Image 1: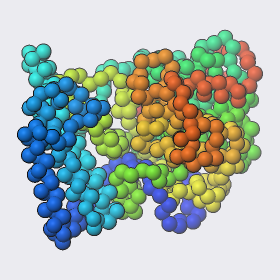
Image 2 (image 1 turned 45 degrees about the vertical axis):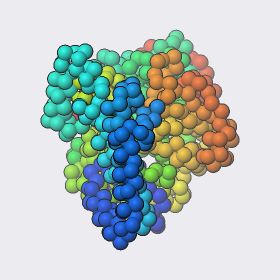
Image 3 (image 1 turned 90 degrees about the horizontal axis):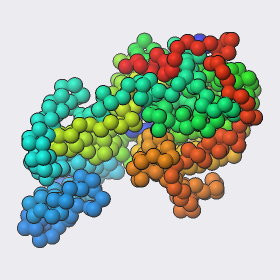
Image 4 (image 1 turned 180 degrees about the vertical axis):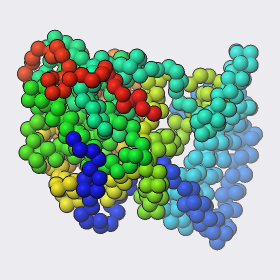
Length: 571
């Protein structure tokens, strides 16, 4: 394999055309400036200056509702399912109930200001983004003196909780760019209690390692599974702890499992583009096919890894190697522009240009910056919840395998960053003339294999409606499963585990010609995990049952070192 391919192998634009939609937020806003929001605030002030009656009406409403809240005679109350106000004192204590009421009145007033007539839609979205962040930031649940749990823990621990909270705050200001840690960094060790499924690296080049896992059954499906994780994070989202490992679950069900582990690039690999990652995936398919005795491969990818395997499958089909694939599985994967997003102004050419200039100047898109961008898309769940937990309540960060994986960030090469932005900004996979990789024009409809697609109903990164429309781009047999969780939780959904019930369960509907809304209305709910259904589907697309291999690789691809390998340990 020759990497990187450089200019000749990079993604080329055939027809630029108009912007068709939006790009996933964190790709474009990982280092976005707030100048757009400042401009939106200036426009709002201009509108209010031209319409003083509007400002007076909002002010009068604020004063009236604030008075009622302070007197405890009405006004908004915290929603029963709002986790910020779960402590009973927010409802039972006259003091804390008034604090919560005043906060909710102020939040409503800020939203009223943004909703005034006269603002352009673009500016309104920009300002709404900033206002929602401000509302989340000033919640009384985020402050020591206004959270009833602070006093409970202070008494219960004889002041130790306040010391721990202050220490963790100062540490994060120094070491974590002021953001609270989401996970205890000492809770997991790669290869010991996470990414610890036994196996061996049987191939390594400068862009990836190929892992073959140890079979767990005496008989296995001759047709192996190849898992391709995202380039944006590390592969072991599909091999977390023992009970949450999709790879181990598939092995226990009699499947052979391989996985690609991507190298964490530096500025020296700035020219690695999507073409290089697709070529690496094709090479991995070839190796797995050869090691398994020429049986077709069940190719599965998650997030950007799903985009990579879909394009690789199209290229294999065009080059006459489509028979090396048994089927295709895509987990929380976008193949089109996520038009349903309504977050920050991520579709703006200026914002995208700034993001591209930043990664071009440094050679990479920094993984930590991208993680911060993802977190700021859901600040209540990914930032302020941990401010309360770690600082106000003085509790240690949780030991969560998903959050540990999420914090173990990687970098994106500048070329791949640019390729992804262009694909999503211009919706290039929506037309057979829109994306060229090397000498081939990518046409997903040429893929004949059946496809199994999983999306998350609460996914803020890959909206399920866009994942559903992506599934409709294939012409083979299709299966769409809508999980209840978010981006990672939709994938990590093992059966028979005590994960939060809100992230469990899924919906299915056999009519895949419907639009997303109609599909959802007609979908039937299923409890528990979708993993067993996927394993059954893989079995239906598999080969004969054969004795499990007793050695890793073959004469051409011998084991190099034990799993999880070298690249996953790169920081």
